[in-house]
Length: 373
Image (cartoon, rainbow, N blue to C red; front, side, top):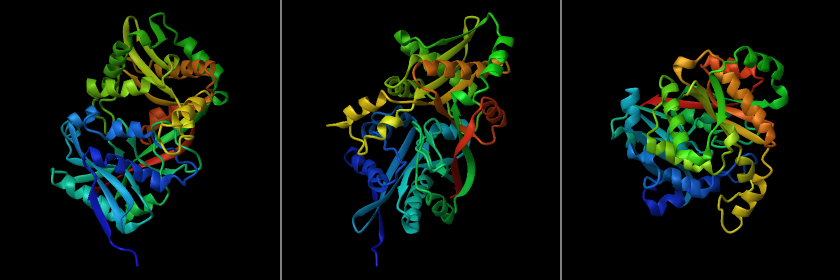
């Protein structure tokens, strides 16, 4: 008979590597799982490195059975979310676990109790660590690998969550798009019909990267302000993320639309680095991982549209369609002819219709769960 589940704290810099390693122990046998680079995970989870933790605190827990790690979870209390959304919700994320109801319950209890001590009235997740990062549990679309910055998990987690009492709260969708699926002629006619001498679409200028990123941040915060779950990113957070993305970005795929002299919209599309990271199975860049990453990076054929934003006063002018079309045209020049648009709230009908009009096809569903404490 197996021994009892024990919950250990994994807080502190000396235990961070142990927390990260749980994911590799549990998932390395899954054919479509793509590991995170360990150095990147440390940057996301270390409060000394990630400015998200300037307004949030977190606790790391590992579940063990007879000394063997069988799961992990991060409990997140985001004071800025509480203030901006006016709801006392605590989050759990970075969840991994064997198909073990007892371990799942113990991990979620540990997160819930820690959050309750800080005043949380509800438990919500998986969110890792915020809606500006990875969100949701994969519940449809297990037959292909995730794209950059999207999660992957075994199918059994959904049943274990529901046994615990978590209920579906929001669904997030991903859509595949290929160049030959797009109604290019019709989109071009729309672009020509709505052509305006005052509208210009341009790639970001890497020579003035910080200035360009600040433009995108201002539009992002204004455009997404009324969206579900949104919390504005601070200047420090946005620039922290942008420095990581800069390492993989192609200037032609980060576009800014200007009306007159004023920035009005943007789109950020990144090469799907997961195609290369998949070949670094242990997540370590040294001694050989970096060479594999660089070798396979040259063979990337897909991209992910990470985010798009249009200022409220400039909506309904066709800027979204123009940005999508120009992105696909420019991506083709870099050997990229397919990609993913994610994540999209299932309830966001205008966005879904717009993507389907472009030729996008549903590919994956991610679910966020919630329960009262």
